[in-house]
Image (cartoon, rainbow, N blue to C red; front, side, top):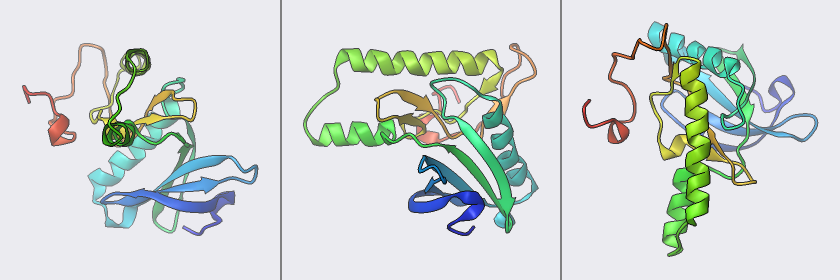
Length: 179
């Protein structure tokens, strides 16, 4: 993807994974977004389907505590997913920095973050969506210190509330003990 892809200007790389990278971009109005660029050419059919699923799931979600989807498009065998930028980093980074500084979070802040995460999860579950990779690296913070759930790459949409995901998937360290 070019630095000026679809009207976005690249600011800097902010992360990378096995199939792509996350880039901080700016639109023509100087608003910051995250562009997740996924290299579809290195994926098999199921992996491409999972990437398209992330777009479908993200585009259907509208909640104050879920990272907002802006748009997606393909260009040069890459899938670009543009989302709101949570300028406070992720919760994992915040916990690490706070611990290294020898400090701790106030009880009020922890309760607020847990409440925001719980409200977002209730919304997801009401829409029959399972995140399936919930961890501190996928809990993002805004400049106003509000929590937002993101990274729906391996989420699953269930047919009903009685259905459940039968696949073992997610980050091993964060899997529930019964799996």
